[in-house]
Amino acid sequence: MTYVSVVTLVAYGLLIAVLVAVAVKDWRTRRIPNGMVGLLGLLWVVWRCVLGFAGKHMGLGFWSTLLSPAPEVLGRIGLPIYGVSLSGGVLGALVLGGGMLVLSAAYELVTKRESFGGGDIKLMAVIGLFLGWERGLVCLLVACVLSVGYALVAAARSPRDDQPEGPRDPFLARTMPFAPFIAAGTVVAFLF
Image (tube, rainbow, N blue to C red; front, side, top):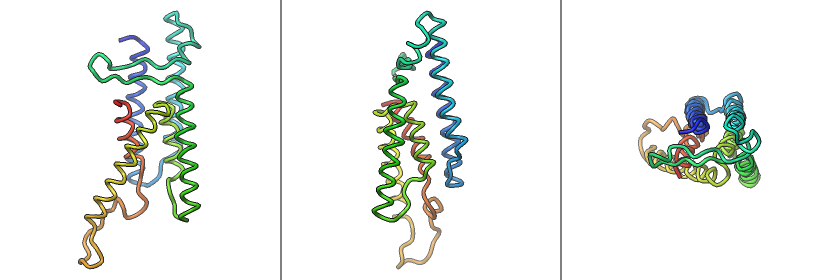
């Protein structure tokens, strides 16, 4: 495994660790702090710069390594995680963050009901930096399917009007956090 592969694997590990913390925070408070999203953005910038310096050290050139796709990691054990180029990451952030913003605004305009929060939109934009737009869309699809599935199961388990009151699912008592499903979708997208 090369130095740049190790750096990439560490960056992906830190991404997952911070995503777990974001998911827990969103689950408990229904908020995604800007600082945590900013930390993920900073991690991406530092990772891309370290890749550039590693490429310069290896004789490949700073800019060519900075702009090139990150190396594939874990390919030897059968779980290839393909890297995204700098431009692919920026495009992923624009497609995911911008797409969610437009869809959320349109939904809220039509239904007059709240949709995705700003934290969810910013988190998906940052995830797009790491995954690119193609795997980012896989992440978003998995997150949406998991969240809808959870909501359906929770609604089926909740007491109906004709039944005596029982404990309601606290997860659905207020707005539903989306970050736990984004985290799960990110793991699936890495392996896709």
